[in-house]
Length: 174
Figure 1: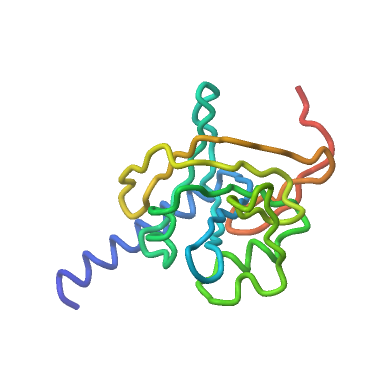
Figure 2: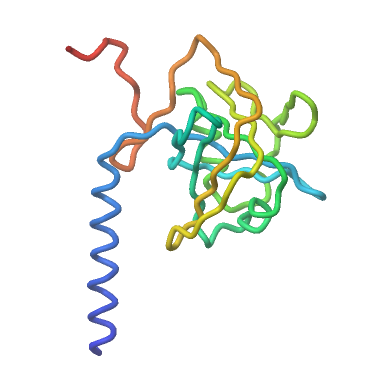
């Protein structure tokens, strides 16, 4: 085995370990959606969604540079963050894959035909691009929220340790 192969294997092992360590932080799951000039809208699953600021109202998410829809997301004048409910694991899986049938059978609703929204999402944030930043092998998107809504019923889809999990209904001990 060559020295470069050994170094590559060590780096890959370090990346796997880093990823498994990051998986110890439980996250919600969201699908980023955006209209396209032609064809089906953009739709990708992310677990890297955070609030940034209340004034102005800003959120962020990151997208892998290898994502087929990255160019469309970088160029779009609007996108939405759809926070998935516990019962939407199939939606998460569908939009996590790079395939052309993501939207088959899904009615992409909208308030005013400018933002693509998923039905039955727990919450939605309709955004205009605010900034994009280099994030190594990802691009970090910061969006200015122009409209948001949430359901009062339902439970979030949770991802932890590389698996979907259910939120315990009992409150944590103080």
